[in-house]
Image (cartoon, rainbow, N blue to C red; front, side):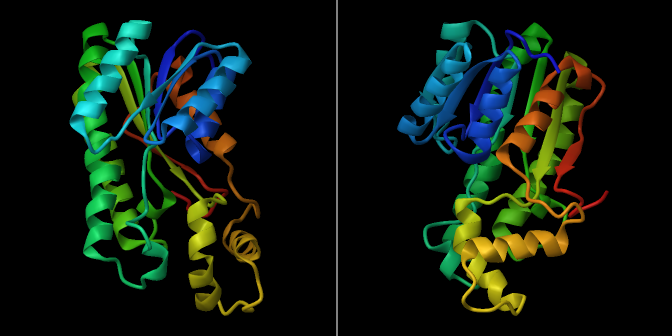
Length: 266
């Protein structure tokens, strides 16, 4: 899985899955642009990438603002001259306070689709013309296992991630004539801020003891529903991203790869 000296842009790269992807790309030879709405987080990860020995750049990016997206794209081209790999990882699960609501609010629907779906499309629309001109590119969209299987996570979130899978398939058809591969990854069960917030919901649904901590609820959920019996990690998603971004995956496009320990099999 060689991505040596490729230039990769990772949106939402400032923490969690985004960080795992950025670090794995760098460890496999890529120069990495860390784009995030929290610029301080992006700078922290960019320094980590540089400590590995690869060139990095931190960019402020608000995927809901086309001007911000276009500015990011221009900055990357001015610095590196090319974009070989685009990883669309930026995403939200709902508006502030979503974990306290049994039913999604209008604000939850609006922000989730604006970031997870429209924002992803805006980034692709901005970067793909450059890839088409060079007749080379790898686009990896981070969806979710919630796109493949109904869960109690969030209705807008699951629906938006199902949309990401569909956008992946359509974009793969559109960009195939230009030698651009477009694929998605559907992460399974990762310990995240989201899980810490919604664990109480699963605790009551699964009749777990009230004294269990959010982490203990998560661990029980993983063991009960994952055949391999272990959680997924940002590094797992990073490894899959490196594969799809490498020439080892040159004949793979329009696919959604589940990284979920067997939670979903298809």
